[in-house]
Image 1 (tube, helix red, strand yellow):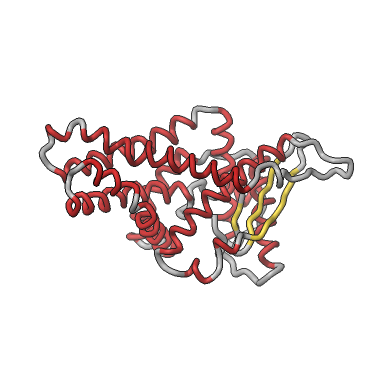
Image 2 (cartoon, helix red, strand yellow; image 1 turned 60 degrees about the horizontal axis):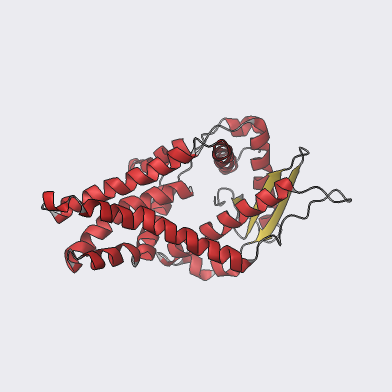
Length: 296
């Protein structure tokens, strides 16, 4: 899946070997002037990423399993799951994510706080636990065969975007020359959130105190603010990726992508190229898109 400026594309390799490709406009809820407002755009992009990611995964599974119709076209799986179902799935996923990655580390560190004696050290240990859970999770699921394929397609998407941003023709050979990590990846967003949260939660604990109920609330309520600040950091690093400070800010996300991306094969690269070309073509039909303005 590739998100362009005003449209996003989805390309899927069907069992017969052909590539099904479709494009859709990005919902107006996730675009327009609001997307240009600092901090607020980070919250908006987080919501959009979750929505498009889950929708694309579900549709790709349906399309890959579909038999072509008599006209040779797949139905595209567009009506397989309603928006209500997608919304409920997102709520459940967010609740599990908050519980596992935010509340669980806090409860774990509470067990050893009597032996620490410092709220600052406690917050640092909590942050380390949170990072360990995140890295352990993405590494653990990489042992699953289907997830390894997803990680390979993830790498192919990034390589195709690198190729497009470099102004090179989208061919398999050109795409192969580029690395799988990309500084604007959602994986970079996750680890940046984990790092920023250490500072944010330490400040909130100092202001609100050490009572458990305040600390649990301080891990949940500020999530939009932490996400907003994290996005601005990633955006700044991406705009200055050749500068030393840009490289330092991008480093954690690029390191984590060594786990969440894999080297794709030629067939997977072809799917990524199809998605990239479709997204660019859809945008060009509306307004001329300058090179390098694509988004993952």
